[in-house]
Image (cartoon, rainbow, N blue to C red; front, side, top):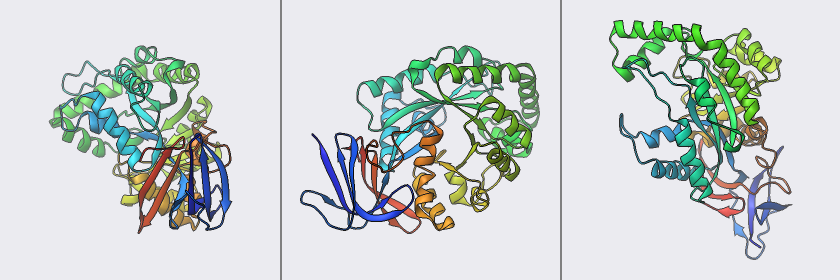
Length: 380
């Protein structure tokens, strides 16, 4: 039997924060007791926060490890292990690694090829070998404005730990890039397009959407059902987008771009997820709605670190300050994402729950992670 007691801690429970101790036995939480006593053999947390491990539903962080410089393909096993260790170090104990499905190969300058199936095999293989510290699931980002989506979706099945399928539409002039100026800055900066090449790119993408958009969207919805995965929308901008997401059965909305879309999500019972970098920076890098505006309007439910893993904890602490409710802030990165993804065994400190637990010292607006346990085993 393995047993760990974290004592003299400020426990972040589902509805309150109280001083007490928490016992983990054989991978589960087996006792929660109020009071500041430190039993023999317990770890004295000195008043630090003890909370559920953070749950990340959408992160592009693995891409940064695989391609640390443009056109540098880092050895994938080393990249996945480093990505896993980085997430553990900032308190993330469950991650849904976001992998794009749906490629464009006909554009010589701006093509993006297939990679998801082979990279998924590498992630799952390392997990099976016990090489990873935290819990990994897959999040397939289904690009409807692409050429190969259906073929790529068919290469996955229910055995692949796919927890989420999100409907992605990056058609120029729509959703995230409804302001084509923002798209021009992004694409020309990344690919070095001339003005004429950019216009050709826009025309080609719009043609792909007209040709494949509807059939690809239907295929992605069907694939999510086949995998047993949760469906998410992405970059909803108008109430009509949200109504379509609701008709498909979306559980949560990733990064709605307007207040109107976020409000429509709540009207349809769809949870709203926003990016932690948006909250911390004070606005969207794409010029869309600010996460803080949604928080202050009571329209924000879940936070994702998106492209900065360490931002997840900081954003949750900030939300606790904005709302005057620390437990509610932490829930946006623990209980709320667990519920959205259908993971009932984690995301909360309660008897019998999976012992994914972190210890945090607050330092101003940030949190210093001082201990990470996954299923009761210390990994950081």
